[in-house]
Length: 85
Image (cartoon, rainbow, N blue to C red; front, side, top):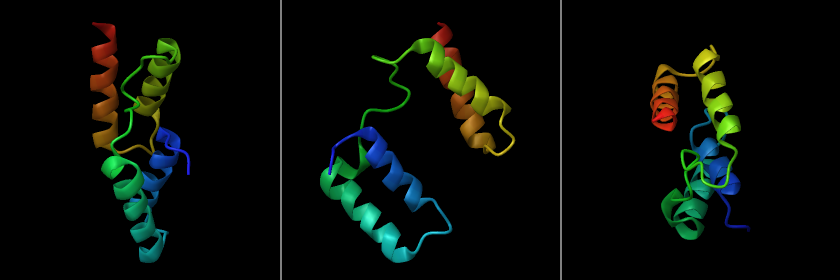
């Protein structure tokens, strides 16, 4: 399995998905612990190597998306403000 943040992100998403089985969640948890140091991968907030305009655009889209939690919107707002400094 490739050690990349997208794969780890898929496993993290699986853990929070109410439509997946406990067996599947347990598998994802084990993969994250064994192959991704508990899920510790390069964070999306680390914009090195990424187009800052695209990152900012994604964060702005998060702020306007009605399907995003208030917690996620707050995080996106803080990250966006950090990029502007």
